[in-house]
Structure formats: structure tokens, C-alpha cells
Figure 1 (cartoon, rainbow, N blue to C red):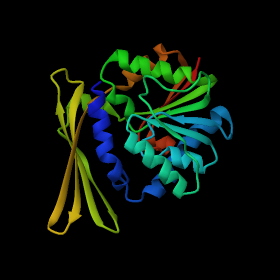
Figure 2 (cartoon, helix red, strand yellow):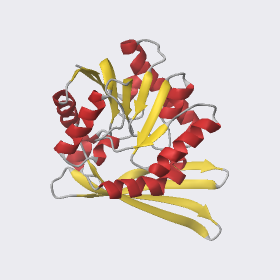
Figure 3 (cartoon, rainbow, N blue to C red):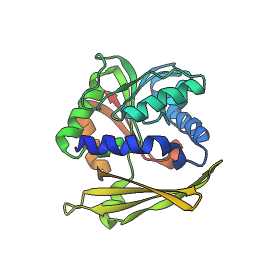
Figure 4 (cartoon, one colour):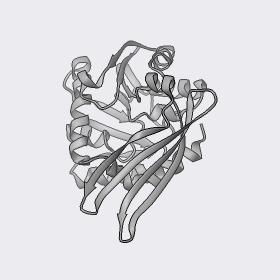
Length: 256
């Protein structure tokens, strides 16, 4: 994985990340409710000790903290992690964060009941060795019978069709409308792609165009399932958005 590329991408995006959502606070609450709906049947109502190991600006972590869980966030981007703590405090929640690569989590073994790795974050790891190392670290910091909650894009169809772009999204706030879209440049291996992330923000002269670039691995469900099982998890279950209420497919798995 090109660490500096991923960190630079999210450092640059951190200030505008909330613009991906028509209503960021409503999305936080909705996503936390969906994740709670996956955690409660397996671990009980809680509160639980939760690590969001790719917390970004706090989209999942803040919602889970507001729901009463004891949440810690970590992220490769110091800009995003700092904003997550500040945004949580502004909403009356505590969210300590650490700057950390998920392949080397700075937490003691068995420190958490739940590890969340959402928003397609695993796909920034571009080799099997990196994916295996990250999943091993997630397992290490989980207690006995702890729960992994992992979400990725539904790449099975994308791998067959190799789309050149992701559909545009439009959000609106007091500054006006923001348009977000992505261009995908597929590698020859048919699995990885370079991503150009465009945001068009309203400006006095028209549009302020912001472009960030990174690389992702279009991991299929089978690849994710095999990697999680190989890392020492069992009771693996995929949850479709239609049943979970979460916007991406989610895999839950127990620390074996």
C-alpha cells in the first residue's frame, strides 16, 4: 500500500468529507442504528468497548458513541482523526482518537469487544500480506468472542464490468450544492484501480473543483471472506444493505 498516498488523500478530504452526505448528522445516526442492529443480537445491548480502526472524521464512531458505547477511533490521517474528536465533542460525546495504520494498532490485546472497519477502508490495502496483517491486528485487539464488523463496496459486479466512474452525489448546505463523483482507472490485473475523487463546491465565479487521488483494491466477497477466515475468525456472515440498513455490504465475524 502506498501509505503516503492514502494519508494524503484523507488529509485533503477531511475538511470536506461531511459534504458526501445530504445530512451528515442524520447519516451518523442511521449508520449507528444499523451497526447496533448487527452488534446487539451477537453481544447483547452493551454498552460495548468499540474500536473504529478507520474512523475518518467520525461518521460511524460518533454515532456509536452517542448511542452509549465506549468508542475509541484510530485513523491513518491525523487531520481526519483530529476532526473526529472535535466533532464528537461538539455533539456532547467523548471520542479519543489515535493516529495509526490498521496494520499496527497501538492498543493492548483483548482491549475491545467490537472492532469496526467500515467505508471500504480495507480496500486501500493493496496486497494479501497487508490485508492479512491488518485483520490479524484487528483480531489481536478483540477480546474472546469479540466481534469484527467490516464493510466494503459490492465489488463482485464491478470486477466483471470495470466501470469507469461512480455515480455522482449531490449534497446541499448553507454554502450551496456540492457535487461529488469518482473516476476509476483500472489496472491491467483487473482487480485494482486508481481513483480520482472530484468535488465541485460553489464559488463566486462558478465552481471550486477539488481533486484527490488514491488507489483501491476491488476485493470480492470471496476474497474478503477467505482473508477474514484465514486471520482466525469464525461465524462469518454477510449482511446485505436491504436487511442491515447499512449502505454497504457488511461482514460480521467472531474472534475464534
